[in-house]
Length: 125
Image: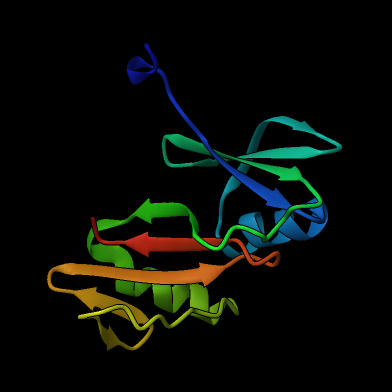
């Protein structure tokens, strides 16, 4: 039933203005409908991210959104870092670090947080 339907990531934030500055200004996403006083929707490639106002913003301790960016991981990390995005360092078993990128064999993954502490990532997959 749902296997033929599109899905979108949903991210809770405290302040839509701050979230818009981050997702639009730093990540380069474009605002798309629906929008309102409690919600913004961003286009990202052929997908969408719904950002909504919630008292529970930033309480998720796992990755909320991952972008599969292919060979562009390192360039995107450099660009985001130049815009003031700070990257996370995790010590997973078997991980190697190449600057801000975590290397697991052929997989290259970098994690960062939005202003509310939601965990986001880019991966070469």
